[in-house]
Length: 129
Image (cartoon, rainbow, N blue to C red):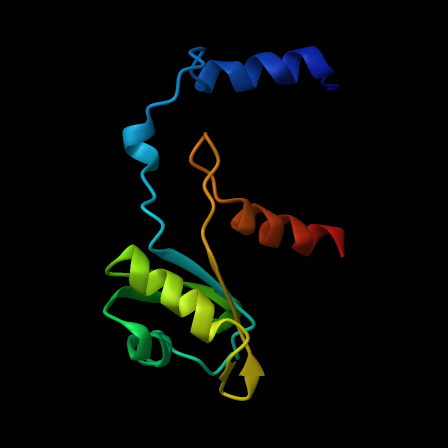
């Protein structure tokens, strides 16, 4: 059975809204969400929270785990209490050393559709290398 480009296109539109308007209330990102890369596989959520709490109150810290190996994939997310604390983390913790590895800290960027390009880049990178 062969699939033409046209039939595939129509199957996607069945599940997608035809409206081009975007409800921005669902996409709210005040800027206090941080994306952290370069993490060691030994790092836990608690270690990440402790490292970032030096610059302010941490609301949430989570490491992304490989679903099969149950170990860190080398990146995670931290939510700080305020925008100022998040900016301070970027300023002082970007290029800092955690468990012997240099980490990078940056704001999570959301597109108009509410997607995080950093996550897409990581998922896509796995299939292109």
